[in-house]
Length: 135
Picture (cartoon, rainbow, N blue to C red):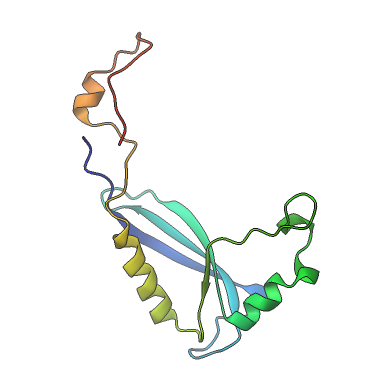
């Protein structure tokens, strides 16, 4: 059985809304999208996870029905799914990144879809079934 993947943050990229500069520490009105590249500690490749980080006031503005737009709503225009939102009372890059660094290890080790060497040895390219089990 595989031991799982131990994840680490490779890169954090910020995209501030309305092309604003990064808010000053302590700012109470801010919003942006964050791209977090996370990968295995034993591999340089990474997966991208996107989230929103913003103040409650900016989030309220962001989700106001007049700002939904067609591309953000489900068909019919009456449902706006929201996932991956991190609200902060005031902006602090060190606090935000420390929170990310606490969350990622909490979910490690995670499942892996990579077969073990033993499982690979049991595979036969000509067969229609295998003995490989995924965690």
